[in-house]
Length: 374
Image (cartoon, rainbow, N blue to C red; front, side, top):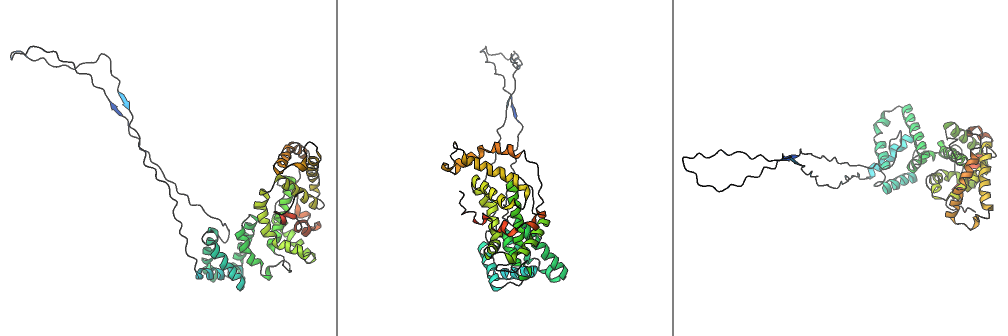
């Protein structure tokens, strides 16, 4: 995992074997003509000269028979993956990594944070290749940190934190853990509070907002670019002192919860759950983003029609039957979708008028595994 571009994850070691087949030129075997059977004759006298033997010529020409030599394959030996030797995790390695990582982030770790780092390394050292690479590459930075100018160290920190945040948006939990130490420092808060507002939370909010809008529209219409991230960070920083304690708590848990929800829970739930969520998000957001209204109406009408259809008997269906009913109605739904005008939504244009904390912080996604869809 490079510090300038964190790329954690296990790297599979593949071993391939080349098989050389030797092909031998076919041998040619000629069947010799049969020898003539001698006829008994009188014993020749010495004066008689023995006749000169002649070769018998077969009546029919003999075609050489070509017999290919069998190709013998070498005995196949099962490929054995090479043994990966993991270097021992020593107290010195833990101490060096903690000190150097703190220098890169310009953060002085508390005893509790140092203990958290030690516990995590001891727990995952044998199985987490990305984490081992991060430790090794951080320790290798010692000469650069010792000789670098303050400006160079600041640039290194900026690059590292930016790449960690992007890796979090890409779904990497290790990067979230690593950047959390930077965000925990008061000088890096966006707004104070219990808990404080961090840049990771606002970046995840931008990602969550785009995800919701794209799901409502059924296609990619928005991305969490830097302009949107900055707009949400500025708006939430202004809103934060006014929002409730419960919403602040929700926002503090949003990064970890959203990673789980987006990468796992969302795909594990039923089609009905996902459609209910799209409708819920649309109802929350359409007041701020007018482009969502028509699509959200189509989604509401589709589900309402299924529930009201006496031939479907929605309330008596199980999850699999409801999924089949939704899929059956998809042809008519997509036909209606094609009648809508194409849109491209610039979310940053709406942030100033949006109640971002309520639109995102109160989303039921934090109850992703407990939400009862009715």
